[in-house]
Amino acid sequence: MPIAKRLTCAIDLIKKAGEIALGFYGADLEINFKGVNDPVTAADMAVSEFLEQGLTEQFPDDGVLSEESFQQSLVPALRERKFVWIIDPLDGTKEFISRNGEFAIMIGLCENSVPVMGVVNQVARGWLFYGSKNNGAFWEDKGNCRKIELARSFDKDNLTITVSRSHRPKVVDKMISELKIKKQFITGSVGLKISVVATGRADFYYHPSGKAKEWDSCAPQAILEAAGGLMTDIYGETLRYLKDDVFQSKGFLAASPAVHKYILDNVEAQLD
Image 1 (cartoon, rainbow, N blue to C red):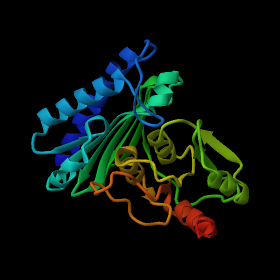
Image 2 (image 1 turned 90 degrees about the horizontal axis):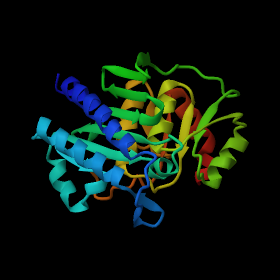
Image 3 (image 1 turned 120 degrees about the horizontal axis):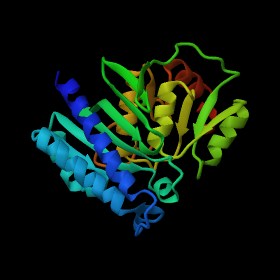
């Protein structure tokens, strides 16, 4: 029951947070930069503040880690909490700024530092993805909800990869060529790409860069795994959370277990 209660609360909060984000969408935004090529807006801050406050009020014993208030020095204390929320107020801030709709609000929940529940809200499109350990995953499309579950089999000659609209490493293009991947699902937001895999609209997402952070992967990983998928780093090792370093430094691979094994087996030579 503790997970179910938290999921209900997270869905309620993330829908309200979506309304906050849309209040800024299309407006003239002042854009600041936390680092090189890392923009932040008033929308990021307003959504973060709302979610942090709401989760803390509802679950005062839980820890909360949000991209916009993150301090590495607080992580050791968070590790002591059984439940820790990991929030990305706007995954795809660049897409939000460019107004192409390919951004998402994400709330993930770790139990003993392992992702067990996630909610991803693609506000502009009316898509809501959510799932939790042992309770399945769901995709809500403009109010119409259906359970999502990944197929156990696949056709290696008919795979679809989801890729970034704005940038992708050369190793991804090389893999697409060598594995003769014919179809691509293009979207912004790391969380949306993983969520698209959870729905089966794409077969896998290969992210070799070590620049993604824990808030990029926590919520969608929980959803993917609730749908029967598998997400590891690109070497097949378990992704870890609440680390001394917030980066997912060895990238990640998201797919069904069967596709995951196929991709790992066939890209191994490129990683050596």
